[in-house]
Length: 471
Image (tube, rainbow, N blue to C red; front, side, top):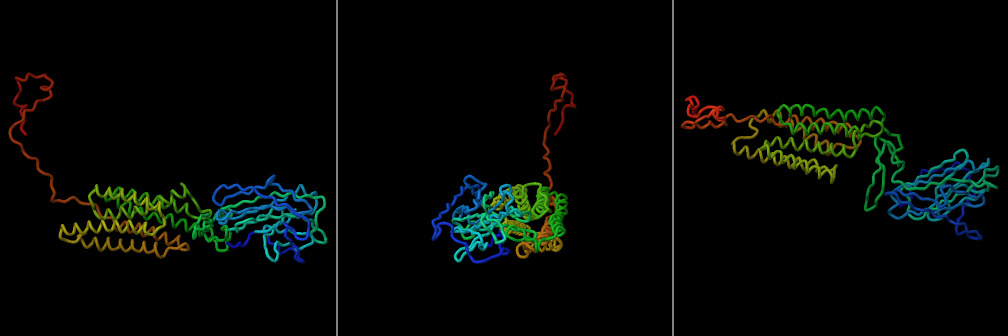
């Protein structure tokens, strides 16, 4: 992968002259050979590696030569993250001299700067990243997203500013604190982003998923960011739109659909707090871990559709309860496999509709008339409810995008809750023709012994006629 644009210091403001950058080791035409110090690799996690310098992290840079360090990036393991390089100049070692430490970070071969020369990290065949620290800016940071694998060389040279340009310092050994490490994302994507591990064509890499209009490698570009009032409005819409489940809950309780009402309450509660936690920026409120809230929200939404359609089938109580339980377990498994799949919504809905269609067909054949039997039920409840639910599914599947999510998804909440209020069947009435069986009248007499007789307090020989009862 080619080396992308760097976030390091730009050297375009410095004066330039003839290109005098040379290779450090081996050097051609001289008898000098300056050593390259290796670094120790410590792997912590995926794309999380720290590189330690032997006898570091404070590095002494002699005035007469450069200090060179080698950082080895492994293939595949290190190319999908961000290479970070930080330098901090120790001010107490300067002794009042106007010292500037220049650095070149280059891949494949080391480069270094020489006094009275151009201050840039490039040659005819190589180009690197430029760093510098001095008394006025003693800290510099460089970040390279998706670095090229192989060996990277950091060459550091301390030079003193004079009226003739930068020259080698005399009797001053600058000390620099160096920190080099790999991270999955830049600053963990900040407040307005989330760092995610992705895979494309068997290539594993990390990237920031920015929200609220923020952009950039680390979600730091706010040129198109949403304002605070806009974020607050979107959060309130997504949360308060769940109050549309209050009427379906009241209708279910009034119709004695207590299981269905409990599912609607579960959905309303977790959908509200999931969307309060899902928002980017400072308009965030989480009562649980994000993953738990997301799972409960998705499960509640699918279970609301499932129990509503099963209730419309008007099955026997034991069959309905078994289907509710099987639906909850199956939907939980499906959500663990893929939470954002469209078939997680369409699959259970179509299967429940098939069960309802079979139940209605059997009931129609037995009664020899259409079920539901009244045209008012079809015109004022089933048809409006079906149209509202179909519109909600169409919005969710074909219209909703990241740009319009906050108001399209709020409409989805209201449409789904409204369709439940129309589609939930009325309370089942007992059949008036079915009456309890009359108790069969027996014949003959039954001898009833009262309490005193059972306790032996009355002589059995003088039992009165009143103790004889008929059945």
